[in-house]
Amino acid sequence: MTMKEERLQEIVQHAYDHSPAFRERLDGAGVRPDEIKSIADLSRVPVFTKDEAIARQQADPPFGGMLAAPLSAVSHFFFSPGPLYEPGPTEDDHAWGVAVAMLREVGFGAGDVILNSLSYHLVPAGYLFDGAFTRLGATVIPAGTGPTELQLQMARDLNATGFVGTPSFLLGLMQKAAEKGIALKLRRAVTTAEPLPPALRQTLVGQYGLEVINTYATAELGVLAVNTGEGMAMRLLPEPIIQVVDPDTGASVGPGETGEVVVTNFNRLYPLIRFGTGDLAMNIDPRPGESAQAERAIILVGRRGEAVKVRGMFLHPNQLRFAAAQVPGVSAVQAVVTRPDGVRDHLALRVQLAEGANEAAVAEGLKGAVQGVCRVRVDEVGFDMLEDRESVVVDRREWN
Image 1 (cartoon, rainbow, N blue to C red):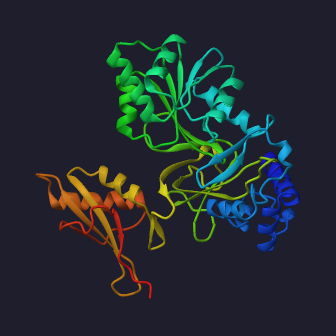
Image 2 (cartoon, rainbow, N blue to C red):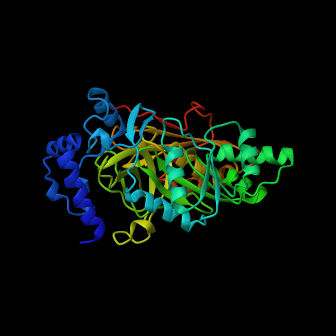
Image 3 (cartoon, helix red, strand yellow):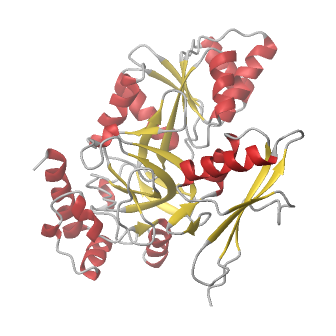
């Protein structure tokens, strides 16, 4: 038995004993806490969605039976969109150490001065990164979401060497500094809370000389994965326990398959066991069945609810866009899913060509790219008008 499995057994028993919401879920599934002995056993526990968490809190405020300690044990209360009440982590929460180790690994350390432009108001983002950086020995400027010019002044006057915030705000900050002829000492930035397109990363790195560390984090669970270079794959942190599961069955998906990111933390104050983030991701596992979690990675493709299942595989608009971007000559693309015989899914692509593009080359290129990225075969490629330019994936199947 590994140390992580020992900790899993301990947190499951603790949650069962002290969290009425979790006890109700486990009893409803007919599972005893002592039956959860390994990460594989977690598949027996139903996924707990954010919608369910919100409903529980509305029915039984403030925490819906999810808190596993008295209210007096909570140092901070946060209020995230949903709405959802969330307690801040305790001072001895092991998650702090994981976050600090990640920051140290990517190059931050004692002596750094960090401009923290994440919100400190109600939501936990600013507080969580603030705590991780100060535990590392860095000094934090708690700028929050203040005006760009004021943050630029603080970064200059206080010799900020690092940044944490959204990539769009960072770009605006660097552009404003260049416009005013202000030389900053920023050399390394952590971005989070919104997508980081490759073109924006290249601008921050190539034009402004920054080292960019992009993180995947949620308000409920903190930082889960990190990307430090090219590509879209985000390496998982060693904990909490992160699984990618079929949204319909809750079973783990295989390498290259897409599923929902589901997380189990070790927070004794607020244990979240099999918490469904609602984020869909492609699972990357170099040694299936043997990889340590820190060896695995995910590619985020969107939110649950936006994806369409085609022949057992999820097809998400962002996956299709990513595949199409690899094929020269594609101006716009749309997937249309039908079931002509009432039995088998038929996947057709409608394509708008760029000027001068070759239809045959584009068709073959798209078939290969979609097969590789989305793991589903394209039955037909047409070059007629797109049905609805607002919809990247159109589901025309009838379910009578």
